[in-house]
Length: 141
Image (cartoon, rainbow, N blue to C red; front, side, top):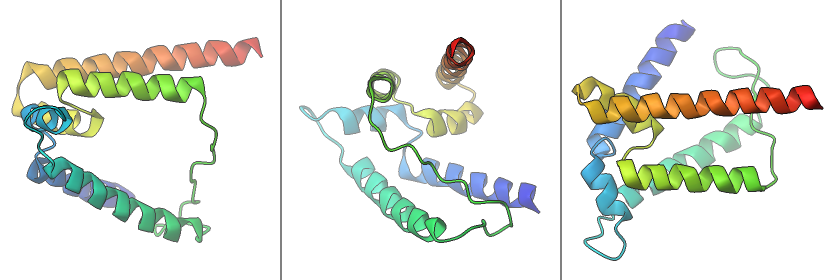
């Protein structure tokens, strides 16, 4: 049952990304072009997503278990540090250069183009490098 719910949720997320235009790098770059022909439509998509997320996290924080019975595991970190700021900067620069962020890039792989494949491969490589670095840092402690 959990796999079915995960599949349906992922499918809805992917379709939403396609409908909103977030899988179109030109639209994303147009949104990021504040000094030029700025396209504010993705700002509305993001505001809608933030509102849904705020409501969902508010409800989830009051529950000991998820709807399907798993323990509720919400993020607990609250500090802003150099790693968070650096990661956000790298994410933003990558998003601006490629016109993709992780979710839309994964959805865009079905288009058959090489750009989303290269982006996802690079993203996975970066995640792997972080994981190795993080494990090495924890071994030193």
